[in-house]
Length: 396
Image (cartoon, rainbow, N blue to C red):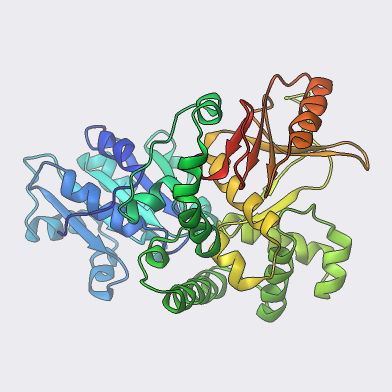
């Protein structure tokens, strides 16, 4: 198989899984690079006793259309696998075959084959994998590229420091200026690999439109049972326009001309298929139930730009959320009808996001965090501002 030029951050963790027995499931939205990464791990598996199966190929689907699961192993042997050695089976797009987890469980339990699997929707995979696979599988989620991965795809080198404190203290105006135009491209077109690799603006836009079309045709139409897909589409567009804002369920349901229950069903589907994320309000009581409206963010800024006209501040905030989401639990804080903190990570690190930050923003955040008892706090600015508690957006 073709060697991969641009490795993803998840790559090293997945390579380590090759030597462990558990079933590995790689999931995420369509076109985030799951198949490419699966190919990469296939190439890194130092064994000739392996096979790659693409289930979007109807001929490969036939392999699993049998009630005798032992016949599947015999078919794999005919394709060259040896039962006398450790077998590695890579299966792409498992959601195409509805009963495949029962097959995988049987073969795994009886023959100890190492499986690497991909699927395009957590909504489907949550129902696809029964509890009987508990303890047998580990799931990894893949998202669009972050800025560090984006630069790799652009053949650009940049040092990213591991801690927020180091990111703030090691920034420089020169470095900020060097990467600002690339960061603006990243904000405008996002991090879907197929979009990043397009050579010009028009092709990037067409690629983004194709991603939304693919999501609507292959996820929404196939996986949902919604009767009025035009209202679902309109709701998705309404939510995109409210990126970074708190959800007003009554207002949105009224504008979309749907019931509150229908809106909740739409939101659940959009969230479970990686299209949107919801961020809850901050609570000092970690074990308590957090009440209050959640804020909504889209999966990718490029997709956000073609679906809605949002201001640069909201676009930046969406990008920063995507950067923080993989680092821990994210929430936001707002006093009743008062000042707000955009993000709080793991209830202990606060972030305020500004298109062009000023010293007043640093002081205001300091005051809010002091009242909350949060010691570590940073203003993230898209325009360079010196200071030990300011992080340049391209450095995050």
